Amino acid sequence: MTSDIRLAFAHPEERSQASASADPRDRISLRDHVVEVDIGAFQQERGHKQRVMFNVVVEVAPVTAPLNDDVDRILSYDRITWAIAHELAAERLNLLETLAERVAERILAEPQAMRAFVRIEKLDIGPYKLGVEIVRSRAEVPLRVVGQDGLESAVHPLVVHLDNATLATGDLTARLDGLLARGAPLILTVGLPDGPRPQTGHRPTQRRIDLLAIEQNAWTLAARDPRCVVVATRTEIDWAIKRGQPVVWAPSKMVLDAVDGPKSAEPVALALWLAEEMAARALVVHGNVALPAGSRVPVEQG
Image (cartoon, rainbow, N blue to C red; front, side, top):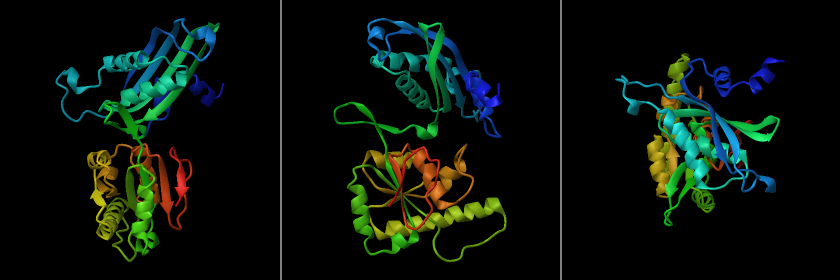
């Protein structure tokens, strides 16, 4: 059996190790957790509980402060079983895929959780196991807000990249009006400004210079339209989204602080990373720039 096939059927913990970065994270796991639940799309499954087995691995952010043997400083195992119990109690589901998505999302709402491997298998369908396995990262978890009806829902913003030619057009205000009319919270990104900038010949310092140059361009856009506020952190973005405020992203802090952030300062790659980080509805790219491939969010040409 080839390595790929073997890994396809390996425990999620082994799959996590195989796909880890050069600086792997700590992991916690839940193995062979069996629950009886009414689930399934077929009529013969309705009204009858069946055994469902969960295997979950969660990669967690490194702890920077001393643990002092304090359970409140770590992601406790019972948060995983609670996430499963919470989603099973919420409503009856037809699909294991839906259940896996909701469990992963619930786990990734925990501050320490960075990536979750969730495998769910039905044990009573036949002389075999039927199951599904998903991998989700914190980057894919959307902001959740409570509406006027008191119900919690996910918010998927629209990330829009504007090139310099678009910024210089006389119809910028009308373009923004059209984007806001789409009804999604709006996050604008920009590229490097035209003109020379310092060249160091040293990749890490050049990356910082390029990121700061992009931020200068962000402030230039903010000066063009008073509705656009420059933001630098996830907290600022979340605050603005909850209040319907369009924002322009200054990338340095989020990019440099990210555990698995983008390795370059190429503007469209940064915009795509932000779109995935925010679980965006889509990335819209305005201007004569190449569209990225392999995105986990839809990419449109503006």
